[in-house]
Length: 114
Length: 414
Image (cartoon, rainbow over all chains, first blue to last red; front, side, top):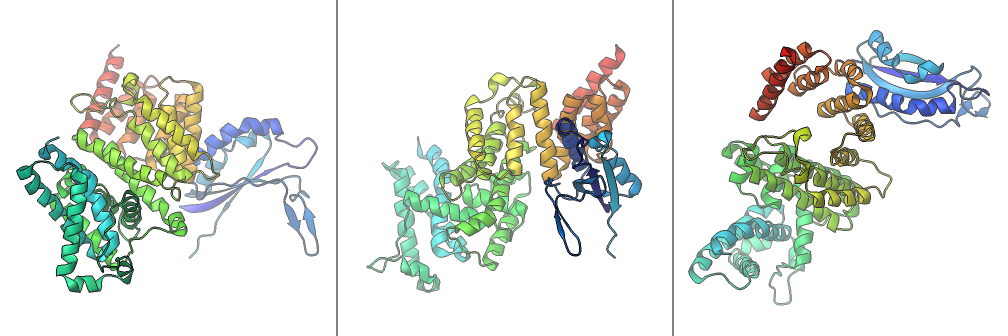
């Protein structure tokens, strides 16, 4: 088993951000069921945390308030899971319920320590 | 009550109290001396009471005799007296006699101290449970052997090894400080929960004994509630959990000791008093900001005290199981979560999730698949139940699987 990082990116800042707050509300149960399903396979590395939308972005000489938004999407959620390989991890990531509202999920494998 | 009935009862309730007080006085390294003195006290009671009849206050009689025997022992064995820690000498009165304090308060304090001593990570969890039964609950080796369905020799060795480990580790029996309570309460709760589970889920057919184990776990838990320093939300949550489970004790077995599944239980046999007590303590548990697995499990058990199937009930149970699994994985929680998912999201969704669980050696897994495939694909349901039957070990589980198989065969024939 390898460890994977699932990074959910979504539009937090633009005027008609998607998913909308109503859509996020509707996503609570499917989201909980999705995470519960990963946990039921014993593939959750650590309990996921909720991250606020405040954020700071640090560059060489500046600290900018707010989440990183120069690209349209900021980090909306982070999850660490266990999976055999990328195929397996992608299969799990496809279950993320906010994908249907335009979020993206980035999947990264932790480099195994030798 | 006649001495014949009273003595076993007093042994159960008083042995542990006097042992706890003496152990705290002598230190864990002299635990056998404490146990010998108390055993000797009960031996004197047996002889004396059968000759002269019951004293007016049998408990006070036991305390007085135990005190005298302790004092005599200390007089006789001056070397032992010298070895005792300075702390004890400090508690001696002006006459130079050691004060043996068997007041209600000191008994409660000593028992709490013993609880924190026994539930020490220096010894394995199963040894903690055996030792807790022995020292905190006054169970004899034979009873513990029956409870674990083990070999008497194995239990005897397990208890003695555990005592040796505690001695080697030099664990002091003392009132835990607030800091120690914070660090070690979790271990204490784990042991109490294991003790309860041993009684609740044991495959032993001895219903009375199983009942006693659960009652003892609840009594120990209640001691923690009675002490302000240990009356934490987690302690209340565990107590609530045990109340909800114990409320179904009468309903879950028939006269032959066969298990009756939840769906088939007569809910008029559920103990409403215990359910209400559970609700009270679950409310007490909800005062802090901490959520433990006991909170989640108590929440699940609470929803099970409502027999009627409603979408609200199963949605709540599902989300509690989701959170429980996020906090700590266990195969049984994964299976129960999938069962709840079938109730809320339908059987096809649950089947898809079940097939990812990878619990191929677990007969409960195949039993769940059998349940999920019933009415969806009865042929598959039958196969799964048959696999479950092959993997099941206990007579009760086999009987349940047999009933399921017979039922599915009937569906298939119609």
